[in-house]
Image (cartoon, rainbow, N blue to C red; front, side):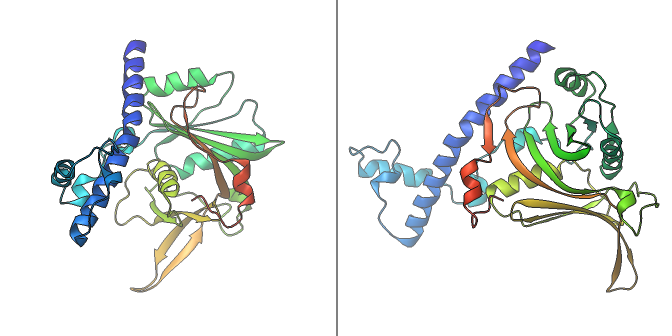
Length: 297
């Protein structure tokens, strides 16, 4: 079992290493395709190998290799491997906390479990990250969510996808529990698979974060009356949980269920949560905070 996991991990890392080369080749072919369509000369910088000795025959060969359909020529990404079974099988999510959680953190973990369908909450106890990861793999869990706190206030969230990653880390802000939502603090939570709304995820990194969050949830039915919203504003992702009732053919009535919070990503790793030696795909650097007009997502 361990040998098979090690082999699959090596194959996954190898495929990730080839992504950048495939993306560069794809971009070069698209530039040549655009130049051919416009009838402009092709610069030698776009040739394979970037040689000064490249001839017109190389240009013609590169032009012949350019695909005609842009959609068919798009290179595969790690999402094809990481979430290849998404939509075929419902995700199974394990939710736990840091050790010795406070009552507020335990309550937030319970409410978070109700917010994500097909999820299971586990009391952390003395389990290490290696033991939790091994349990996730042996029980065919797709994701592990670990919630941390500071002085009784939930302040961090880790989402790790199995079996090979990625792992994204968020900071939590303004956590409001269900019983603190005045309208529906004592109501029950719907068990329907929710519709998802993503707003403001426009960059490549934003699409990456959106995909990681999206694949935590199963595919909903069309008549579901439950909706969850992830709205990005200045790299802070606001989470809201509502149910709705259609009052007429043009109007619906919303009711917030809770919990609600904001989260901000600060690191993405190309491995699972216990693999501390895995490569860093993206990390929030200190100099990024000084660029006030530069939004990452």
